[in-house]
Image (cartoon, rainbow, N blue to C red; front, side):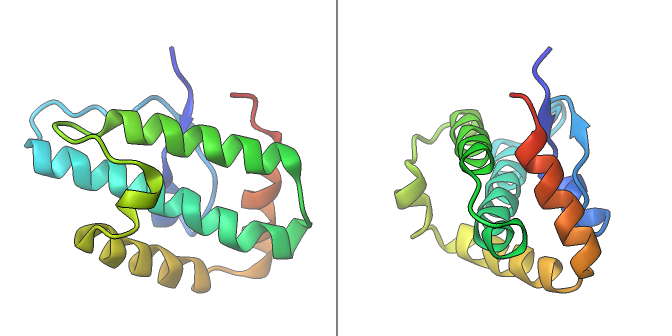
Length: 123
């Protein structure tokens, strides 16, 4: 069983880290499944942007976030995108804006907990 951050839930629950199994894509179109993956990557990217200012530079956090992003990229169906190429994707840009806005709506305490948890996860 692979344990991963379900970043979609992370944003939905006020930017809180929750460990869960990989997204079950049964019944979803390829486009819907890829959108969920892009949401996960965007949330991980937002954590990479926000957490250093909250908990300081942390090599374990950086490593965990990079591992999550690489895992999520491998989950894209029918596409092979690098992280840098994804940054130019129009849909991803919109999802990233939404993820950043969601992060702004959370309290500093919630953000700190998320960052500490993300740094402590054993992947």
